[in-house]
Length: 372
Ligand SMILES: O=c1[nH]cnc2c1ncn2[C@@H]1O[C@H](CO)[C@@H](O)[C@H]1O
Ligand SMILES: [Zn+2]
Image 1 (cartoon, rainbow, N blue to C red):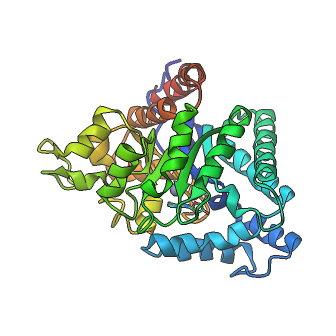
Image 2: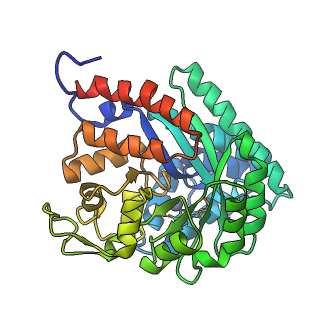
Image 3: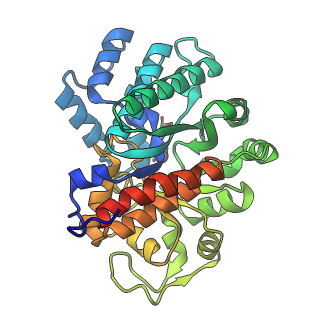
């Protein structure tokens, strides 16, 4: 379906119409500020740092803008704090699916850590039931609005805790009901992925995929462990893989002198997907600025790069906004954005035939209209 007037100019409204794929988005990092306030009121959570919607939105963004992953993660106390009942969990999940669909996301894998939602006396399975029920409601509402989306769940274990094996078992127990993979998250320094080998072994033993937050706050050793010892299918962030590339400077335009070390070569050769989260990386100090983000270096070297939001509330962002930042910084066009989107769809933990159907029936036709 060619556009007779040529390519659509790339701006936020046009980006919202593009069919987008999101692999790295935290449920507890994407609440609407108004919902945080309402749930705090309903559930008797008294510790919120602000009392109005704009103040609370600004607080999350500013507090997350700390240059430190550990400080950034402290902001989750307040979102997790209001997500301790089945109704609250289901509402947050439903609104997440609706917000992503309204932004034009057609496939999303949304992650959260069930072990953080037990303060109200729920079991891990009850938490899963509430969240997956919320996603299904959100999918149905979005379909009724004419913005269909498929939302699946990644089940996260916290890397400083000791429940990862149990969470891996939970993931496998729910895999035919919407949980498509496993992850570990939380502070990276001091908590290497190899602390959780039995969880990863369990996943591999059950032919079930997983991603690992690695190479965000901590460098190459963490990426190496995630790949070599743990056998992850994707890398959450993985942005520090640039530490294994010499002969180039991120932010430059000519990367022809790039030389890949063994780990970087393995990541590229094996087509290991990188779940890059540009705004989040700047906020946590993983990268100094958007202009210096290695996204373009990695894209030009043909790593399997994907664009992600990480935490929409803390970064005050959306998938469309992340794409616009990349367009403004690196001059990407629609075909680049389509490539990143297809990279993401190819890397999803959804069955192959369903991935292919979304690429052929939704993503390519959607971009064709915009490319013209
Ligand atoms: O970028 C990140 N790096 C590491 N951990 C994160 C990041 N964003 C969120 N979380 C952690 O993951 C938990 C489950 O969703 C959140 O509660 C937060 O502690
Ligand atoms: Zn993350």
